[in-house]
Image (cartoon, rainbow, N blue to C red; front, side, top):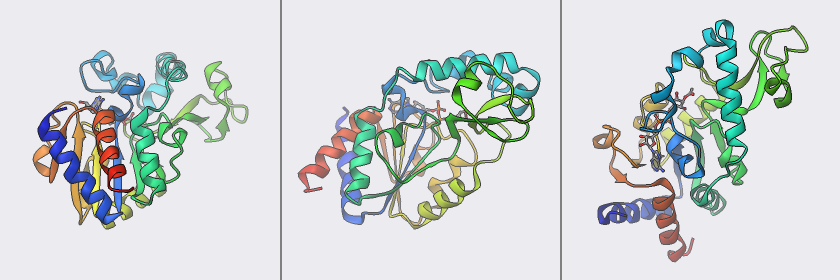
Length: 246
Ligand code: OAD
């Protein structure tokens, strides 16, 4: 790890420990070390596929074969992946009263799988399913088998936010509220390209920090910008916090 990253990770951990009021905002870079590809870096999904062809309401309606293939392949790949040590650090920080909320753009459910309780899924979940037409919930097996909705015969889809769709209202409002009141917003593994989530860090009255492997071009907007792997930097901070008695 870069020595500059270590120094900033210690400063960030100090704020986490002193203020006990941190909100974490995660993106796909939080899960790449679990084996889940992100979207915009070199090996990301959107470098191979144009999201507008598969991740929109129009794709569900007019291009369902491709839509279904993309999401069922992602689900199959996800079943071999698990949260990594970085996810468990955040769970420990929540348990020790340091972290108030993890707001995530990730749909994989890894924060909850790691035991976190206060999680808001701003882009929904790929682990829950509903009818695109009538909204009735459906089982994963039905989606995987490409069955039609049992209620209305409509097309089944994962409960993710597609491009052009609204964010889940409660998740968005609660994230905004807790971000505003936080003493620190720690952003982990997101390119901050997607609106409106990329507006969240600026809403806080507290400090802001970011951990990202590559440049996001938003570094100058943060009080502390750390270049590095999410898992490595979170583990480094966790070690600092443990040594400080947390
Ligand atoms: P992106 O793929 O846009 O950005 C992920 C960021 O994480 C990149 O800047 C990577 O450099 C960084 N990264 C990758 N691995 C990392 C690691 N191990 N440690 C630290 N950083 C790492 O993903 P998001 O910003 O999450 O939306 O994308 C936002 C939304 O765009 C997604 O939720 C998805 C997508 O379209 C929907 O599907 C609605």
